[in-house]
Amino acid sequence: MKRRERGAALLTAMIIVTLVATLAASMVWQQWRAVQVEAAERARAQSAWILSGALDWARLILKEDARSTRGVDHLGEPWAVPLAEARLSTFLAADKSATDDAPDAFLSGAISDAQGRYNLLNLVAQGKVSEAELEGFAHLCEAVGAPSDTPTKIAAGLLSAQAAEGVVPVAAAASAASGAAPAASAPPAVQAKDPAAPLMPRSVAQLGFLGIDPDTQRLLAPYVVILPRATPVNVNTASREVLLAAIKGLDLASAERLIQIRQRSPFRDLPQVTREVPALPPLEPTRLAVNSSFFEVRGRLRLADRVLEQVSLIERRGLTMVVLRRHRVSSLDPGSS
Image (spheres, rainbow, N blue to C red):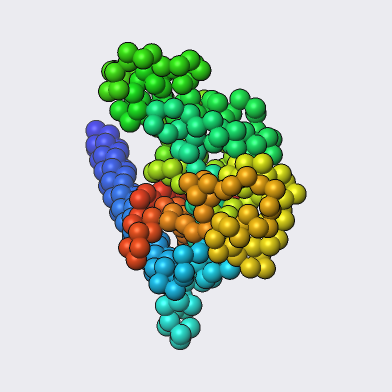
């Protein structure tokens, strides 16, 4: 009997020890997890503040450019010089010994002219497709190898999306998409919202809303943009493919010639462009310009094995810089694997 009691007591003691060890391990794990969550949240907040500071720096550069420029924006200005990846501590302290214990954080970024790309909203105006813009955009799609039906598909999708948002009459959007003339008796107000209409894309990455496949999106991404309103193309910053879309009758050879000329001396006005290519028809100020109001700011922060990228769209209104939208993407650094 005593031996049996001693065995039961030993078993009970082992069970208690196991229970205590399990509870202790659980508490240690929960504490470790809380520390990791807190560290990740702190790193996220610090990264967001750093990228916000980089955005403020870009706004300051654009503001100073607005003060010094004379209505001309080109790729030889300070805002167009990208910031190569540099260790963040070099910006924070001249004494390296003060930052030896700081984590390795590297910052890079660039400002690009959003009007150096073709604005897809130029395709539609007042509830109908602009034939001149559609023809120009077709030249761009042909130059980059996009499918031939891309221009009409995007234009029809934008009209339907605008109608669904109440921007243009539904009847006008439907007739423009089908190629038929709108009925004379159709009222100018929006009649009803089409539940099957696509969402309005706010960026090139959302062109899938309009039925554009990923491969075509990748082809168009370096050359097109979606801005809040129709804008002219900046002849001083646009690529030759974008110049084909903005200047009627322009060929690739003439577009390359314009780029070589502006590298030596930026265009100060549209008549100067006409003098360089006299065979062109009169240039339209609504389609071409020598300055810009919209800029895209890209910031990239690399912290340990994590990378946080931020893309912001800025509109310059005189000396006021307005951030219209901001998008952040977090990922693992491919070089860390």
